[in-house]
Length: 316
Image: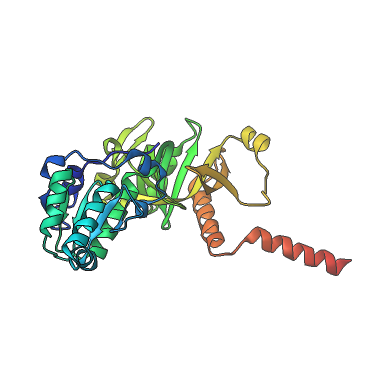
């Protein structure tokens, strides 16, 4: 599910300092929102904000120097017609950028149609970049998964498995080896673009890790600031299983890398058997290093298969 609501007032307050904008028209429309159908149909934030364009309705229309010139440099009749057409786009907000002065006709139109208009001294390109990034995250598809999200060697790794297999204890050992914690127990996942899943920690659980028999640990207080992360892009799922589960459901050496679908995106997956005496932290690090090699185009298993094929050919 994704949220479909953000009001003009929320958008204004969110970037009041960053974009240095002022609310110059449509003050009575603080609750004006994005069209829900347009939000659901949007593939990314790029579909919800852009330069003034009459064929893209229901999005934030940004007016820079060229757009303002288009609206003002014509006959009075043409200027009025061009400004009036903006109301048919039903934008949630208009943004005047590049430090442009507010055209009186545009201000009157916003007041009459109850369309909020903000004016920013920042460049129009910068305004669009900031808003696209924010809207992509705000309206992203999202889900919550049970597990421990870690930063291991710069890779976002989600450790999953049945309850009681020692996921949090494994996370604690990895932290003691210099890796970072993002979230324990509940991990919020966001699809921020077409091929990227971003994992974050719920505010309630930030910096906390629960270890059975000890209780809640404040990882930031115990290990320091460098032991925690605010967010990571999910690149690998490490799934812990019991011996019988591994033998029943998984191949010992899979021919192709395993993947798991998360919010419509296939994420690489490694399965590790939990047995007393195994050093799971070392195995997880090895899985991460192997994944890094695969992401760089180095596939050890395929190289072995090719080597075996050549050896069989020479032997024949």
